[in-house]
Length: 229
Picture 1 (tube, rainbow, N blue to C red):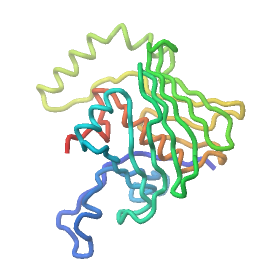
Picture 2 (cartoon, one colour; picture 1 turned 90 degrees about the vertical axis):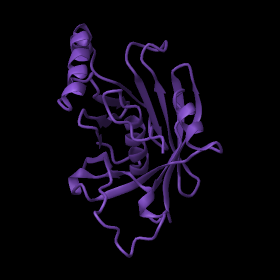
Picture 3 (cartoon, rainbow, N blue to C red; picture 1 turned 135 degrees about the vertical axis):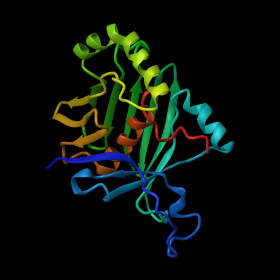
Picture 4 (cartoon, rainbow, N blue to C red; picture 1 turned 180 degrees about the vertical axis):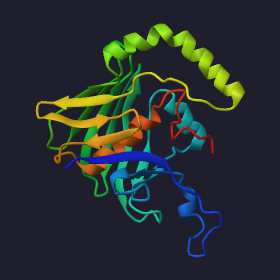
């Protein structure tokens, strides 16, 4: 049975509850949820793992494609579900490793930016432990050919939305379908959800993938890990 994962903003209570310990739940803003079980069903709590030079160092490395974050099982940070680290990031190509809480390698994710020498679309390659390599491309070529000629119009709409204080702006094609020798194990939909079709895909790897893809959201979107505080 397929399951769905989505990165969401953690709702904040109007008043802090007495049982919430200082510096624990307050440190989280984004979570991975399973919408099929309700938006309150938290799969993982997301937290950036900062380098020695803190947030400025993270944001600087982030521009090159580097990412580093933890998926916690609970807000008290007792159990690491997974840790995402950057193995290499250069020239529009970045390779990430996803490690489990016991130090086991759950899989690797490679992102090759569009026009970086590997194709016209951004390419995502996911290899899970014991699973064949799955490759997905951002958007269908047909929809990109429809979207780019109207790009000046989208810019005008975006500028108008800023002045009007709201409004929807058409975004580029974002759907990703990962294909492997075993079929279609994963999909990323335009509503920012990752659908896992194959039971062989580790759910922790899928949750890490959903956080990775969302961290590369466009300038019209909301990357969850780009905050300056």
